[in-house]
Length: 139
Image 1: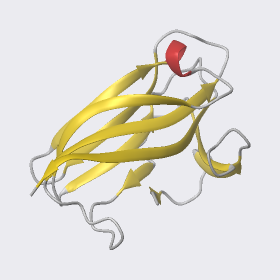
Image 2 (image 1 turned 90 degrees about the horizontal axis):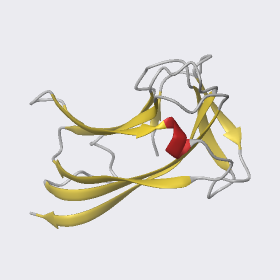
Image 3 (image 1 turned 120 degrees about the vertical axis):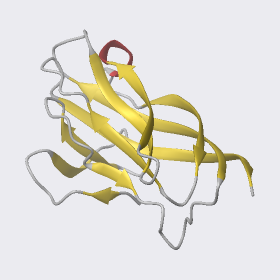
């Protein structure tokens, strides 16, 4: 479960038949905000130090095809280090969800996972379905 900023014009939970569970988060593609975050201290998924592969399932809609659609990855609060990947609009624009491999991240209990639109005027909506976290190694 993601932390979601208070509902605003930038973010809504919507019914989406293309999503894995029929619901998705939809955010304004012309904004840049980390309005979808996964905090490290949740009881059902405590972040243990180690390496994890992150895969985001997302799609977007809009008239454009240039520039970036989204940024997703991890942020270490103590070290103030962002490890993220930018996804081009031409790759994310689709009526079905696509999985984007964000690579292997060195995570610890001070890391947030995030998904954010990249303030692209050619993108109306960014839809987020899920973020898969796969342990590669851990302590």
